Length: 338
Ligand code: FAD
Image (tube, rainbow, N blue to C red):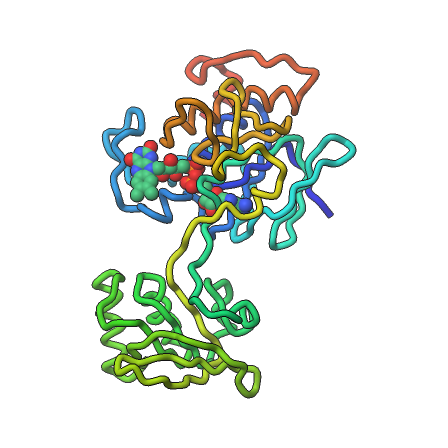
């Protein structure tokens, strides 16, 4: 069963979030899909604590603060978020609407699609092992959605960044955890590192210096992980689960298969409506290209405002769109709850 809405926004980065607001001012309802577990795109994933200096009227604002402000600004319009899922398939229906399907089985029907997908989906960096896909979502997971499945299990966590160390410290409370990293220096925050060392000193976790080389099926539905230690010896480790946390990379992903006019993985749009080569599909923010494009957050905000004007025509073909300022329109104040 699909749920109907006016617009589906693909990508909950800063530009997708601001699009909710601009569409909301015009009475256009949105669902927002992102394959990360939280909104904010590059701002919250890549530089949450870094100050940004070129957001108009904000002397400085961090990536995370900007995300939180944008979420707050979009609240009056009650957007519905579908996180942890990637949009895989879009299909034109006979009615003229779009059917949008995600990797988690969410099915939506909308009059317009707004692609605000940045540089594509954030996907996990995987260990370079040939048959790794055979064990994925059975013994190998790149993110944790349900903690209870790891209770009293034997787990090998791989990596040296914040995710690897934070999950080592957290899962040590309920499971038998070993951390494997190629060296004894870590990229994680000093606080997480000292917590991990403390657990190791108390024999609550084990730490191995090594690199994973191969994975085999083990006994009783577990896996056998072959790794090379710091003395170049090959050793085997039996585990229920392997959790590699090697960070994220960005990939265009399924967008490449949607028949859009692409130029070096960017979607070509016009600069009047930010519409793609397919009517009623728009592309805003870092994912689009046009002469003079600047990959800046403020450019994406401007694109969202103009895109919304054209979306209105698709969503309410019988209605006239009357331009109004947020400062003086009583109708807009009502919508914003001010
Ligand atoms: P993104 O922020 O990339 O968000 C896109 C979202 O779409 C992602 O969350 C992704 O997971 C999701 N997505 C993609 N494909 C799919 C799919 N198929 N299904 C579901 N979800 C999908 N800009 C400035 O203006 N000022 C600065 O000072 C500045 N500093 C920066 C510093 C750093 C270190 C970096 C990396 C960037 C900086 N930028 C700066 C650039 C700015 O972050 C980007 O321009 C901005 O994030 C683009 O926003 P977006 O919403 O278009 O895309």
